[in-house]
Length: 144
Image (cartoon, rainbow, N blue to C red):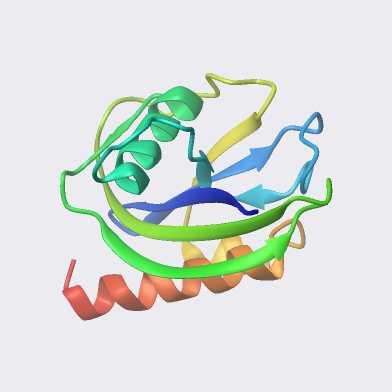
């Protein structure tokens, strides 16, 4: 069985929103990450990935993204706690709100950074770098 996780590559102008994961997190504590979380059981629902993504963004950092979100890619991995995870990344444009750490058990810091700075940061794991590179390329293709 897999845990399904969604992540948002959120951009605003020439900056990308990333978080520094709480040291309390079981997977990748203290690492730079995209905002996201796991899909919860909701019965028969449509757009479950997109709705989960929007919920997690609001719960963790308190902002809203535009209505149009784009699938970037998906991967699978085994988390530090042994869970098998399917991770789905979406490209999102910032819409409104102030990004703050609303969930200190999950998020230590919220940062708006140029992509180059995120990619150079030793606390950014390879999978986050890859997701951000793919989101950046998609944004360029879409002309946003």
